[in-house]
Length: 380
Ligand code: GLN
Image (cartoon, rainbow, N blue to C red):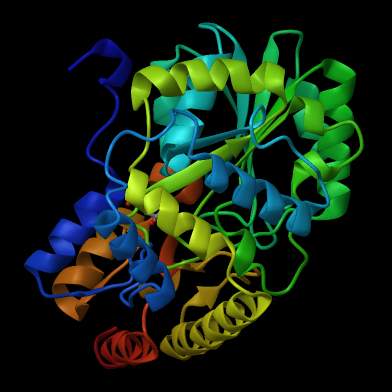
């Protein structure tokens, strides 16, 4: 394996899913729905295939999809963007992040991430040769320590990666936090790369796109995808929205990473993004019911549960059960209890800081969530 990846292993999601499957565990680890996406979106994909929309798409997205993304972004954030010059369709949000990092970060540039973080940020920054700077968000509320952030920004800082609603904590960055981050970025000429794939799963607080704050659009890459919002994580349709000078770099990287994205799925994505508002209302309502089942269940089992106001994840402290660390606890949970979760230390630059925490997802049907809680009640 190349040196740039020698410190990385198979992703924790794959590891836990494989181990869970081996022991017949209920999978509340990897974040994907165990229910299907909406019929009208699936039908649109089938229709597009039948209609012969099967050759390469335009590299940065089929025109109608770029327009549909711009329309949704305007509705959600109030920002008017140019679908031709400021939107790039990618293979899921992960490729948007990869293209952004590889297209805009030079070796040695400092990039700030918040621990715990979604694992690909660290791996992709390593591939780009970036110098990773870390800020740890601490329970119970995982607030951004602004003074600490201020103290680590230097003239070499090129970007900050934000993820809101946040995986794995369920935190939604507040307007105050984002305003403070924004003024630091403007003052120090720092870019913001923001992963907003859970934006439609914001339950208790308003989701705010950092790009919508004054002076921020010109220095922000906003990334999102179809997967979580439409329960179609296998489709891998994502996008990056950025001003032309940033789009240029990320599009160059994108054109050599994947060149273009699945044509029929892009046609279906147009249908998805034009869903009426009632679709999103229902999605949120369903997810709030799932969250309630899981959170109440985990509390009844005896975990200390940290509040999750968005995403489809919840963090708990497993230490009341007396296992050595998060990895040992998750192995026990799979093998002896029959439930898979995700150990959280892997999401920290300094793993010890997260070894008391594990992550559960509530992206499963209610029956599955109840069955998992029952297993834990009986065997933990
Ligand atoms: N985003 C999902 C999660 O955090 C799935 C990630 C993955 O499997 N790479 O669980």
